[in-house]
Image (cartoon, one colour):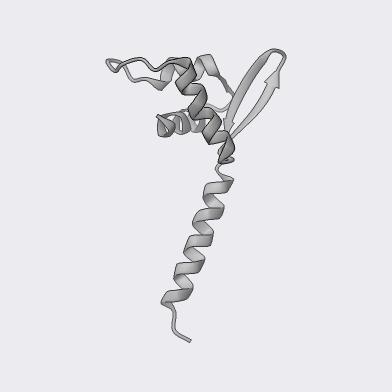
Amino acid sequence: MRRRIIDRLREQPGQSLFEICVVAVPEGERAISRQAVTQHLDMLEKAGLVRIFWSGRTKSHSLDLTPLREAADEWLHKHLQKGTKP
């Protein structure tokens, strides 16, 4: 589910909870509650991957891939250094 949310926000940033819920479940699959989607969004926000902003009374969500890029860069740097000989 979190991957679907990430993909959706990558394709179209600035979505409300309702917009995410509508497309989070592919056709033919069992519906997921708003509470479940909210919990996934909360976890993604705590990980720094989702940013929230308000427009009036509407809470919108956007993707921030900075934490993933930083983790990947750190991992690559660490492992590439181990593989080189002085």
